[in-house]
Length: 194
Image (cartoon, rainbow, N blue to C red; front, side, top):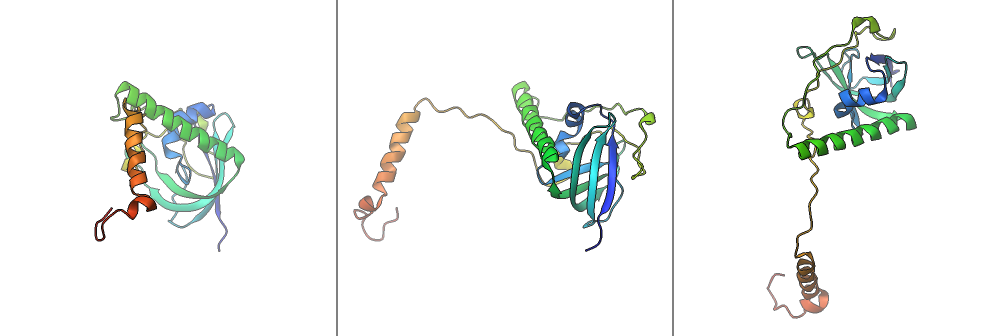
């Protein structure tokens, strides 16, 4: 096995909340899109870090490149990486991203705006520079809904209320289960399906 490609990417956010607001949809439990990273071939083993303009380190992980998604208009290119290993602080960020996505979906469902996301078209100022390991300009990506870059779709969580006749329905199910129990099976004529 060859040595992993090591790189760091600087993102133009001042804190974790700003980072999650802009990029939480790209952070999943097993994969993530890394904007501003180098163009690497699929199956390349990587060890990488994501730092914020404030100096805060938010992601440290190892993984394998799934694909390189080229630039689209103003959106910079991104590496889609499948995680192999990450520490507790990165897991905490991934947990927060999941919570953020769930809260955003709830807000959209409540507002009735399950359509296209609002996009922040403002790009950061160029004086942020890039980290020395990667020759990239940190850009604030214009997020596309996740389903445009992969076949994985976000599930919309909708609260389901119990029906008014819940107890009546449960009793019917209990009766049906009792009728199908081994004691009830002996009463079924041969050749009849349950």
